[in-house]
Image 1: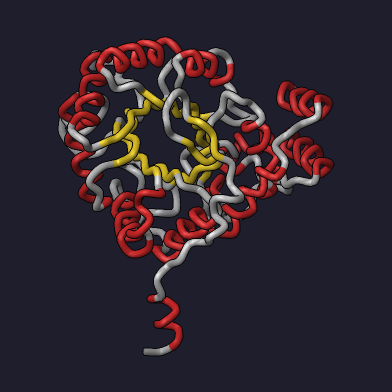
Image 2: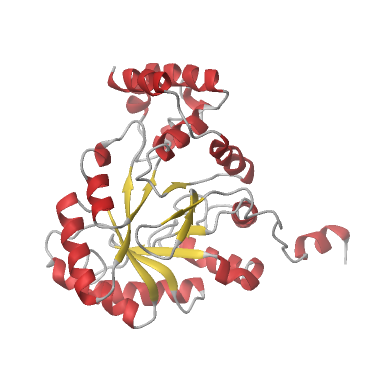
Length: 337
């Protein structure tokens, strides 16, 4: 066997220092401790992406103490691809470490054709989790989320489905995503009565998208749930990438979620925030992550990564999460401007 093949097939051994460098926070009123930074597999884990790069990102994440991995049934492309790739990587590299990982998946968006492949019915949620477990080669997930509220299915039906999945042993914990403050309280109370408390709420939150802060964070705290936020870097806006405009082949040139006009609207703020971060001795992305974690109501920040190096750089945000009052005021003035 040639040397490069020996290296490629060498069993993965995680860093023995992995738990010394990460911060872990209690997830609501549960026994779960989540890393302050978690890894999302929304991008870069589909069939159109490099499988070896995905493997290396996951290895780096675990080496950094990131134990919480976040998936969904429709992550890809195509739908299901991220879970399937993750299942192969889990078996290949992490078989001995399953009990050190806290794995999440979700259902709530369109997944297959017909009337039973979307939203929040018991039919859809139970079928989706069964399919996810097959793709990931798992007997159970640590937390299963309803990915978004369903305006047409009674909340009672969705809640009973989530409770059933825990009682069947297919999920250890339940989470909800994108729920309003009112529906968060309702779902939380229903699940408590059934004996399956909801331990975590996931929502979009960043310096540029702060709707979560108005009342939902307080509601989550009152319901004794943890809070994990996604898109903390506003799809890459809160990084150094767009300081000089829009680079060719960047996400803004090809993503349906980040438009070029939106980048141009925020360019002045990006530059001002970059200047504040530079004074703090941080990159803009690191400051944006630290700013979120400065709010004690936030349990974990969910990051994506296109490379192991990018993930490692962003995790350095944990070295400086405290802010002086004048720094917070300066940031607020930029955001309101």
